[in-house]
Image (cartoon, rainbow, N blue to C red; front, top):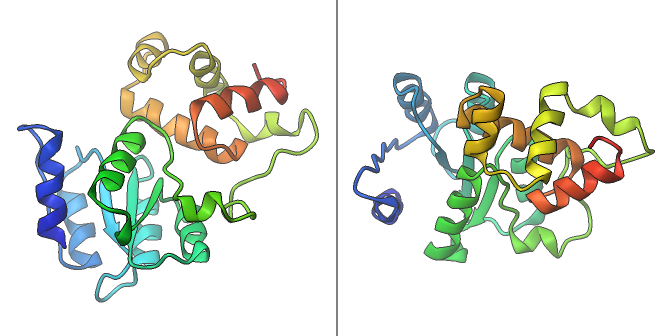
Length: 201
């Protein structure tokens, strides 16, 4: 499984470096030794420490590291739990290579990948805040996140937002992820609409 994903990731280009670990403890140690990771891909079926616990540990130690979960489970409850624990994407193993690559690209662009099994399921991912009365949302975003949201709604790419605000692209992606979670949205268009509805921008 790991070798197959590693070969798939080579499609991102010749400069792509893929690090592998056979269990969650090794994965955490590998991440600790490489501070420049762009994305983590985590199998929920890891031996030893459970995948959900590992996801929590990754979020605690490296809150800015985007993590995409792959899992044999197609249970919407597992997908919701993974997203609630900080995963930025949930890809069932049955989804195929193209879907995994698309999910990783979305996450690297600062967006969330929500699988069809959740989109067709009525409850939103657990842990995502629902938009309530006008004005309430203002407390869910920091001033910096509102600045990012404003530029995002103007169609600026991450690189331009980073340049304008004097931030790294990785930090901009982290802000965008937090914005998506706070506004209960899954892409930039929805975030812009939710921000306008809430009077944030």
